[in-house]
Image 1 (cartoon, rainbow, N blue to C red):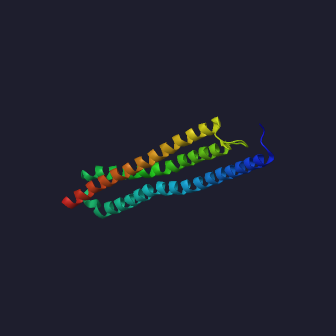
Image 2 (image 1 turned 45 degrees about the vertical axis):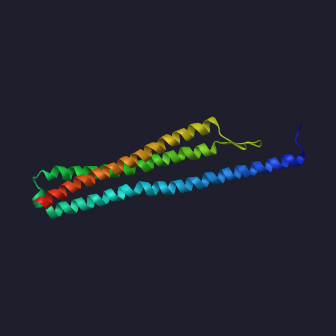
Length: 167
């Protein structure tokens, strides 16, 4: 049983609508995801940079008390953890950029068809999506570790402040 001309034209129109919807959805999701990812990755870096500035200012104001004391180890540890946080925040956007590249490549690898379903996943689509997801998870883990490093730096800074308060 072959389809008549009207059914054929309707199917083609539905396919065009599905194809355009897929393209618009991919473009919109990519834009929103990129904006949120950049904001989420900047926050720990800014906080850690502020922590370093405060820590160095605190050391300058209290250097005579801190020099040669046990609190120097806590000061160095705080500085180390703040730097680790910043370094992880620098690495995470690079991995996120690669993950977005894989997602974009995946979305362009879909097969656009004139029979239902009009947009079909391919082996290439699935492979690139998987690689994008792996890098996305690693990037998120780096940011989580950066936040943990920020907390560790703040904890050590509080130990230095406690030492100063007790002397």
